[in-house]
Amino acid sequence: QKIGVVIVAAGSGSRFGDPLPKQYHQLGGKSLLAHCVDCFVGHTSADLIQIVYNPVHQDWYEDAMSDVACKADIPMPVNGGETRQQSVLNGLRALAGKSPDVVLIHDAARPGISDAVISRVLHALKTHAGAIPTLPVADTIKQTNENNIILRTISRDSLHRAQTPQGFIFKTILDAHSQFEGQEQTDDASLLEQLGLDVVCVEGATANDKITLRDDFGRAQNWIAPTEM
Ligand code: CTP
Ligand code: MG
Image (cartoon, rainbow, N blue to C red; front, side, top):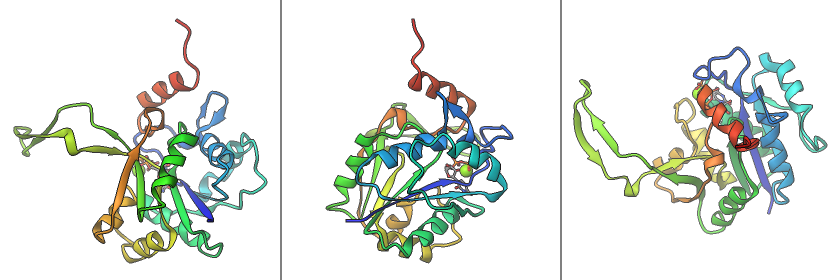
């Protein structure tokens, strides 16, 4: 079974709010992007890695990749698009010629990805069209009206926080992305949901939470280099 990997790194990190996009920031001695690449290269089953970037970031990309332990099998990056969804589709199209059986789609902004999470997704893919790592929702969730008045409390029992890598049968997700090109979904599973296909949730990990804001970066620093008490 051939396993493709698409790592999307073409975003500008507007919520992070730094001229240097978050995926190119250093965490514990290497860039977030390099953390991701090293983990997928190190996972014995993940062979075909395709990075998607913004060519405007070329110099930052090269700096970031110089931290990668084993670059031998990493092809040239392909250009992303205006949205994450478009960037993923570009990455999938780049992999199509290599005919992977399944694909893992991962955010470069999740440097805490681990072998264990990758393995859980791959295992679930043996019996499902799609599988994504998730974590339970810890807070009580309120739905409000436009005046911020609470309408109701949503039971969190059936709620999950979606992470990546999101894994799919390659042909299924390429077809779905081609069909729904131009939408602005923030993850890939939502495309299969629209088609009524089964996507199963497997256990994610706190360290695999996405870096979105500066605060998230501070928390990730604790994870990568625990401070001495
Ligand atoms: N991404 C991408 N192409 C885009 C937008 C996002 O490849 N046009 C990637 C980002 O680089 C990131 C992942 O998708 O690795 C998740 O997106 P997000 O956290 O939203 O990152 P940004 O879009 O860069 O950040 P923001 O939304 O705050 O601008
Ligand atoms: Mg974004």
